[in-house]
Image 1 (cartoon, rainbow, N blue to C red):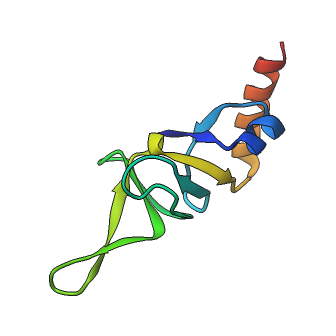
Image 2 (image 1 turned 120 degrees about the vertical axis):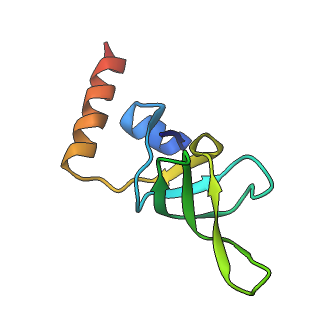
Length: 98
């Protein structure tokens, strides 16, 4: 489940999109929640959605439930970089440079 990178990250890593991961920071760019931003709390692969911090709705009984957002409707603004993630970005960057 991949999301697009922001313009700044696109320039920096020379890649257009990357699989979204927990603890990435994203901005919703499509739908009724457009403009909301937060940290990815959960990547729900079975339902093909991601849950974002502070993007909730209140249920009838007063409890809050996270709203699932499709990864294509968000832009990654900050990446959580580790060794495997850096390897993916290096691979993509080298391929684009050729």
